[in-house]
Image 1 (cartoon, rainbow, N blue to C red):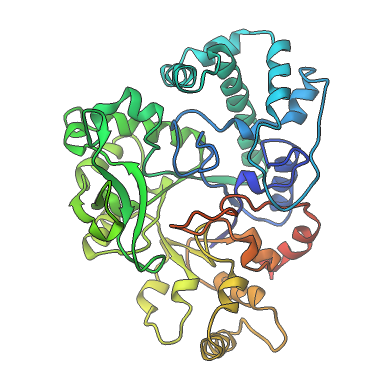
Image 2: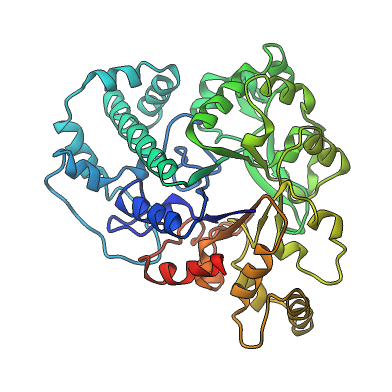
Length: 440
């Protein structure tokens, strides 16, 4: 079993208002390496604005993650501004003025010209020009800096024994490069959506979820052996050490909701299944992937997952219940155990919302397992429980290591919530102390 932590890049401490590819990211890697933590799961870093699972491009990165400090080190910025450190991100254009100063001082080089000679990045620059009136050369500069800073950060992580797990969002935003220039691969009528993405009622929402993304036209994709999707996967396999496939069940069957109807009006359609994965595994192996097999999962989804020996997921907030029979699943080695993920409450927030009887049942289970002693903090006991798993990986969100309550959760699925995607650390002091729990 190998250990990892879950922390989005945006949740790193920062004096610029949002975490980025800068010095704090390197310090975080140092802390992981010193504590023998082998994996850092970061969520998507595509350009999706405030919504990482609704990318405008699968190839362009979010400019928010550019490190101002490293641009200063290169002599590209002289007029520096800082933000007051707090535990919430403010999504604004605070860094933009400094980016533009760096752009004005940047001298194009051979490395830059090699990078921008990339069809996907050129499409993105054209899209940003047409849709957001952003100068093409400026967009190319930002993407060059992002690509360079990300590759340097990932290399540093790998050299220090830390591997990066990154997410592949299932669908792009409708207002995206993907839809604008590759419309034939989407389920559209005259360029418009009549059906949108979502999820059937499950543990997250009794009314289902309506995400509003465009759906894929898999029949059109089959005609050229899924070259459009395969290209995306090639990119992500270069970007990350392990790719977590978001909403895996959509490859078996996906939920299709009429655009003007609630999620409860949706229905399932057959996905591409083995036809797609047979093509994908001509270029890679299933061991480079984790699949998000949560929610309303059917036997056919499990069969598809197991056919290719994908590493599956288990969330302890769903399975840590003495009344639930989980023996067979618990004994599977080819899985990742999480206390929770970005869509869950923190473990403390989750526990605090349980009924007294449920709390006592869980404490009894933890005591029987040897993970809980009288007076222990519940987050530490559940982490100890996770670490006794026979799973391939155990990934713990930083908020659970810190023992934070529900105010620190990353996302509340299916809800327009001001605090979604906005929690960040203020410093590493408590984290450095608490991470030792992963080595007990």
